[in-house]
Image 1 (cartoon, rainbow over the protein chains, first blue to last red):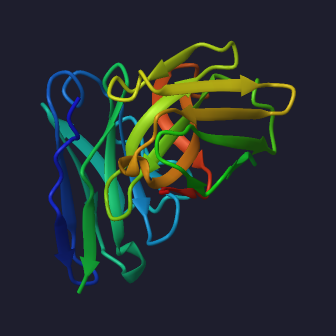
Image 2 (tube, chains in turn yellow, blue):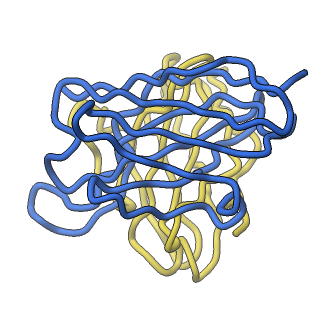
Length: 108
Length: 126
């Protein structure tokens, strides 16, 4: 079971939008609508940002959104803010659970 | 509000067994449609799911670790535990426990990890 593929890094200026892709297979991302996204600041535990592809837990700003097309899921951060600078991981159900390789978001 | 806290030795010798416990507070480990999971993260690397347990004792493990992993639950103590045998330096990581939600408030199937413990660093070294 291989890790889902994410870009190593993405960056944007404050106020801009960035999109992180998460590519898997028909056995994981493409096969289930159980993709979740986690934000992790240095030295901290991951925090749930998106679940079931596009649902936002209460307390997560609406500038975070998720989507999926085929075997690729995406997380978009609109109106980028300084506090959004962190690592982001996708996760998909696949019978078991597989995480993405992680993406570092840099706010320029 | 449910909180999770990992505990256990921070240093384990090669070939020995790593043992960690996760204590759940703010709610019963037996309530709701929750599973309880372990996830690890080597320094500077990504997250790896280790396995999960239901309070009935039913388990499911990452196939790559299955031969070395045992997860158990003690409902009387509101705790669940991880044992990883025959450890090597490659098992050095921050280990997190997390609640796995599989049914949402509308009684529909779902899958997400929340909340997470703060994590505990386990180093495998002689």
